[in-house]
Length: 193
Picture 1 (cartoon, rainbow, N blue to C red):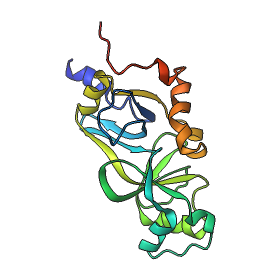
Picture 2 (picture 1 turned 30 degrees about the vertical axis):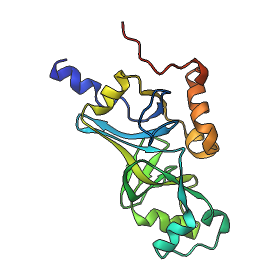
Picture 3 (picture 1 turned 90 degrees about the vertical axis):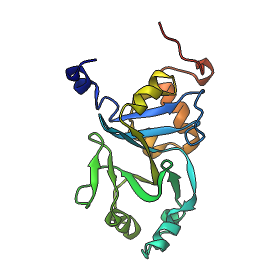
Picture 4 (picture 1 turned 30 degrees about the horizontal axis):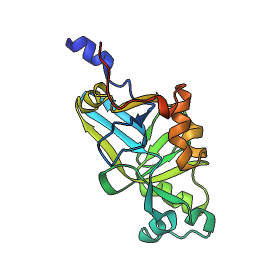
């Protein structure tokens, strides 16, 4: 592939969700749905949106010395966003501008890494919809493309209802269903012509 074609190919996984195929050998991603946040020639970054961590949002608030009187918010689960930097927090949320470290992932999704979004959530003035995750999934340049060629991942458009509204156990099957695929029809071996 020449340099011009490489430039065209990068970024095609942004605003997508990766679904781990049945042959996934990395235990960090078996059965996972990962929201892709960034994809370029240097690599890719995503946040897994369907794996529970051992923490609640209230525990995160306590660690950050944030007061939250809403018990429902305090009891919300925190997700395992991926194996890289598991002590770093990410808030995937509906659009709300003004946070210190935010990145848009399409028109309807933002990712913020700064404490100010958590302070607003604790105070009841944060984004309308959100999920909090610890850690992220990261790939070096060309690594993710190689995994896709090896049949480790499928991609589907990132949909806000899957990310914010569905129960965690339903997210994988629903995302797969958007492709018109049933899990029983998937095989772990890649086919190449």
